[in-house]
Image 1 (cartoon, rainbow, N blue to C red):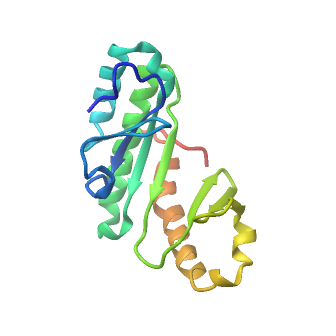
Image 2 (cartoon, helix red, strand yellow):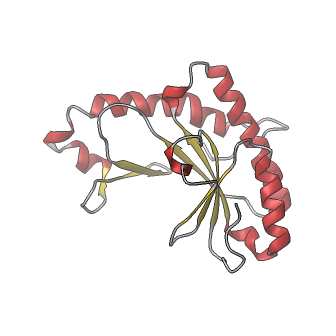
Amino acid sequence: MYPPQSHTGPVVMVCGDVDDDMFARGPGRGTAEGWFLRISNPPELTILAGELLARSPTMAGQLAVMFRCLPDRHEDESLMRASLKAVRLQIKQLRGLTGYTVPVVLNAEFSGPETPWIVVRGNAALVCCDGGPPITLSEWQRAALTATVQPFLAEATTMLHKLILDELEKAERLYPGVIAG
């Protein structure tokens, strides 16, 4: 499950909805950019990070967490919020363990029409279509072919903001927010 001992690049610990094709070949995936490791339960984040740091203390600055969400699999909002809260607690513990604020990446996939990758950082959004260069969201929205997909994306974005980002931004005493609002 670990990256090779010689690996010095990024390690992304992937939690949330991880029981699909992303890890069909096993609990770890190596790429040219780094390693992705499947985490079945949030408490495993700090356990795995501790084991990686014991192997190589310099790994502390290379760790990141990806929360993967497949919203179509969730029928109960309170259960989804509880899992996000558990991840927030683990991120707090990772800060103490590594001495760093560990980056958190949100990956959400929805059923429906084929859509491009949309990468959001802060208030900026880039659209990455197959075979083309990244373009701004506003440029992509002006294209005629996007008219059928835009209502679907608007609904998905609303759900992401009202549920997932809302829960990740919350700051409570024991469960601090993990992203800036």
